[in-house]
Amino acid sequence: MQETYYLNETFYTGKAAWQILMQSSDKLIIVKFVAQHCGSCITLKPVLEGLATEYVDRLHLVEIDIVEETEMAIELGIRNAPTVVLFKQKQELARIAGLKPKKQYLEMVQQAL
Image (tube, rainbow, N blue to C red; front, side):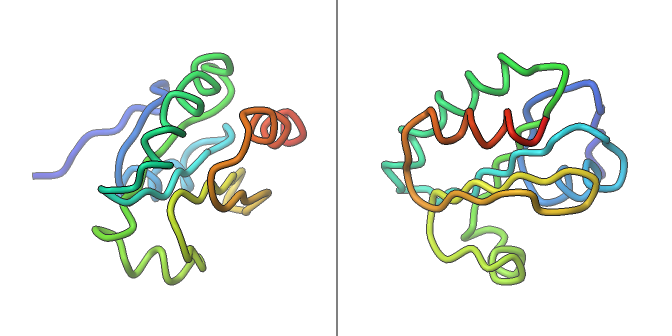
């Protein structure tokens, strides 16, 4: 059964959602690559969710598990979790690997807007 995605939403999970957003949305797309037992990924989650809520009408947040989507991670050169990649109109604009201060994620988004 195919999932339905709505472009007016902010939070998504998985490669299929990312692919649809890349084809259909003109908003910024923040993709957080995570791993199930990654402590830094858990720490980063509320930071990015807060950022997405702050810019709710201007971006989407997609979470992708690098173990479930190994091929995608390899294709995009994701080497560790967490890694945050910012896309807009099918192009990668920025990338932050590892856990960084909230200010760096905020600056990344602000520069792209």
